[in-house]
Amino acid sequence: MKIILTTLNSRFTHSAIGLRYLYANMQELQNDTQILEFSINDAIQTVVEKLLFDAPEIIGIGVYIWNVSEVAELIHIIKKVSPQTKIILGGPEVTYEPFRVNLDDADFIIQGEGDMAFYELCKNIQSDTANERIIKMTLPKLKELKLPYEFYTDDDIKNRYIYVEISRGCPFECEFCLSSMDEKVRAFNLEEILEEFEKLWVRGARNFKFVDRTFNLNMKAANAILDFFLAKEPPYFAHFEVIPDHFPSSLRSKIKQFPNGALQLEIGIQTLNLQVAKNVSRILKLDKIEENIAFLENETTAHIHLDLIVGLPGESLSSFGANLDKLMSMSSCEIQIGILKKLSGTYIKRHDVDFEMQYSDIPPYDILRNKDLSFNDIQIMKRFARFWDLTYNSGNFKKSIELLWEDESVYENFYAFGLWIYEQTDSTWKISLQRLGELLFGYLTEVKLLDKQSVADAMLEDMMKLKGRAIPHYLKAFAGDFIANAKSGTSGFNKRQA
Image 1 (cartoon, one colour):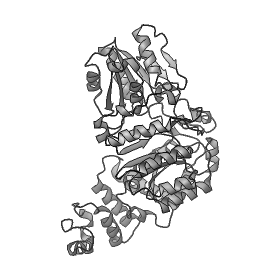
Image 2 (cartoon, rainbow, N blue to C red; image 1 turned 180 degrees about the horizontal axis):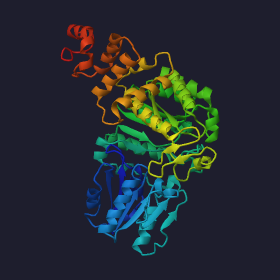
Image 3 (cartoon, helix red, strand yellow; image 1 turned 90 degrees about the horizontal axis):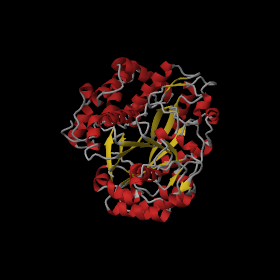
Image 4 (cartoon, rainbow, N blue to C red; image 1 turned 45 degrees about the horizontal axis):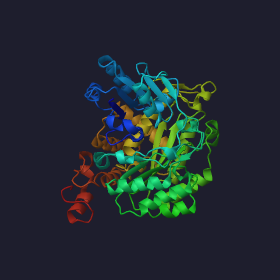
């Protein structure tokens, strides 16, 4: 019996740890099983062609918010050309109902962690005893699972992020997050995990992305993992999702030892408004958050990624703006601005009536409006988030973007800039770096009326960091000192740039 495990990753550089768990636990069916990964940018009919090349009896598909629409098309075509092929779906997007994308053509759906369930279902299909279409799973015992890490290929290690985990689950009950549905946090066998990481390291793995929801919850495990990396010779990259209010001294001392570029910490702030946090059952310890961000900012070289959400029940634009201003006063790190999504199964639905929450039923299920934010407000903030990524988070305008606000409100000034730049472009996509810089220069000098030479100096410092980049045409008239310093070799830039 030929079995294919597949999914559509959001990018080529991503890899699917879930498929490898299924493969690792296929027991005697493993020799008949193959992993084939694709991305959402691949042509669906070409994907079907490759999946059906060896005429598999079963195709298991991982379904996520970023690929559910493409998976629906994939299933439709498979069933048109190979109706006898059994299709099994699993993953977060089919674990909770209602399904908002039509997946009726699938033969079976596994709801929950299917590490062992997929194997059992394949056995039942083989013996013609599979009767239930939707199979609801209980949580497997993690220490009994076979680990997936040997099934990352050499090509994966060379070209993709290697996704790993030391635990599953989350102890918190944030109503917008699927992790709030977990009953508890469960841990893998730490010694076995470290042995597998060592094997990956020996094979050349250097990009490790941990998918644990609360990496710094268990200090024994967190310290052991950090020690693993600190004992290694850089360069390497390790990404962790951490909670913002739990950085005891043992953890701090280790984080301080990581070299520049080796450690990335993603911290879900989401809101700093205590009432809004209470609305969504989120615990906020503001003093600890401020203290820990200050530590990370001032005493470590870790790359910090903070998250804020637009559209939470009870959060007005002014409240969101206060959150952004506060975070910007605390840190110079990347701040990711997301739009609230209503994921099936989450408790955020309980606010639908009181806060007049309206969401799209098309992935990614973004909020469309609520009691405090109109549809137009949401649209503006989506563009705000996109322009924020292009300018502030990208690092391309590190010095010049700050001229937008100087000692004033970051939110209010960037909001005005976002409105203006959209008027000029009528788009948030396909804006070249050259065009973006020209727009920023125009806004700072013609709308904010800042001194052109001072703005040009900041933008030249930003935009000429990369060797070989030519001076933008709109800055040439102000580049005399820059050119002179480049020619004399005192600016750090080269003569070719000048």
